[in-house]
Image (cartoon, helix red, strand yellow):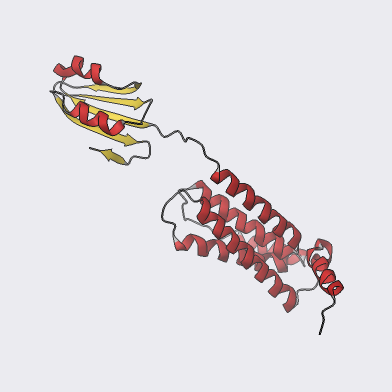
Length: 228
């Protein structure tokens, strides 16, 4: 039995017609179609998130939260879009909710907000906005994430040494910007921002071999110790 291609085209046209979808009643077909489309688009966001995420290990809870928040947002927006009175009551009820979870990476907030936007669009019936917007944003985000560039990753060189070895140490110090110098009676602490971090590991070994140098540390701005 052959399917009429015109019927499929008409169904696709109705699906992408924002005014038509927004005027439809909240029956089971619309609710199910909105939730399924939200699930598909939210799963696509999770895939893009794992491609663009900077950390090596990504938590499974982040992916689950993005999908769940998108689908819950769709459920909230659908009844709100049909009644002004219900929308006012829903806003008042949601105003008492407070989220205390802190996100360290701004990218997590951006992806979560992206998922909320998809839920809002699909809940209101703007399926064309969510589909086109997700595909466009996803391609642009992947293109930016895959663009090769040299990130600025300065390192801090912290040296603790005896005051008597000041002259010999200054001759061996690599080029950099002086951030702080704390002088004590028996020890001096010098903090230097390196201009070139290419051979930083060899610099620590060279300075530690000098007489009077007690400790040499190489630190990133995020506080992770690389050496000694």
